[in-house]
Amino acid sequence: MKQHPFLPRFQRGVTLIELMVAMAITLFLVAAAAYVYLGTRETQRAIDANASNTEVGNFALQLIGQEIMKAGSYPVTVPQFGSSDQKVTSYADATNNWSTAPVLASAYQNFLFGCEGAKFDPSTGSCENSVDKAPDSIVINHFTNESLNMQLNNGDGDRTDCTGAIVDKDTVNNLRHGRANTSTSTSPDTPSQPLFVSNRYTIIGNRQVEVEKATVITSSLGCNGNGASGSEPGNALDIYQPLLNGIVDMQVTYGVFSATTDTGSRVPDKFYTAYDLNNSLGSIEVDVGIRRISVPPWSRIAAVRICLMTKSIGGNPKIADKTGALRSYVNCQEQTQTQEANDTSLYKRFVRIFPVRNRLNQVF
Image 1 (tube, rainbow, N blue to C red):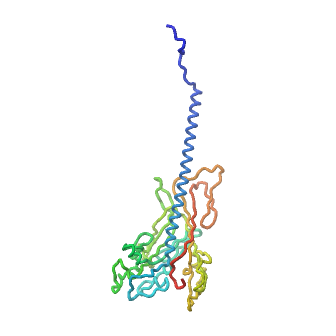
Image 2 (cartoon, rainbow, N blue to C red; image 1 turned 90 degrees about the vertical axis):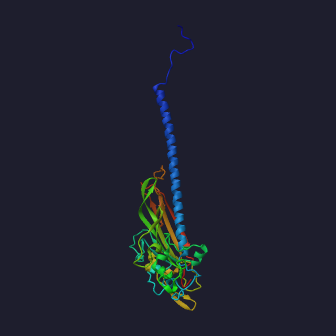
Image 3 (cartoon, rainbow, N blue to C red; image 1 turned 90 degrees about the horizontal axis):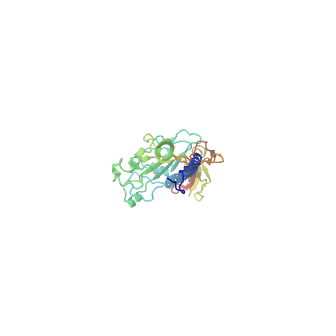
């Protein structure tokens, strides 16, 4: 049989070299695609971590700032007064205007109080041992607005503390509710006096949280209120409820005015730490009309400066640095910190100054 002249004698395949070249090109394309994917994923993680830091920091400042701007408030309109009530002319009077009420610690007789580098202990009304560069604590006190409760048509209104607990569990508020005095007893929804609210904020360390199915150790902004624990010494529970994860530091300074006349400026002259107000700064004599009274440091606060430091939680948001330089950030002590080589977290600082708009004292 004669072979057709246009048909090949045999079919020819690829050589080993050609196969290896094709495989190398394919592997290169796969590696390039994987590199682009991983880089995009790390970039998105960094964006998400930065956005989360921003959201947490801003929300925490808003939360604390709203409380600071209520510090020292006492409603102008009060539903009713009992026979044992006294005229309120200062914040100390407002906290102890029942003859049978226990004498509160000084931290609760001021509209603001703080601890530098230490946690505030509600059970004693004082600061624990201070640690250098440790987070600060702040105590914010005010009274409920019963008129607001009525407007909201809500039995609780603003009678809850930062943990959501109703503050009438406090012994002092039991007296204000009229429960300890039958002659002034009223409905539980209508206290005979505005109720005392005390919120204490600090940083809770070494908390375990679940992130992306992994256990992560972080710090949180924590709060303790007198709704669940009370405010008088001996009855408070030293339990801080975590509010926001990823906040590793809080530093607080207080703007204090030095005007000595009732027409003088109430603009703060300088910002001091809690240690300064508790130990170094003394009272000043202030003219109020024809009188001259002594005003302690905590009653001269006109503004509060809050600095919060957030740290990203979980994941690995660090993008490779081709220069090999380590990243750094500025902390709340205005110091530049260089991150460890194995620290891939993102840090972000938030600073804001809040005016004290409602402080109740005799020199306002």
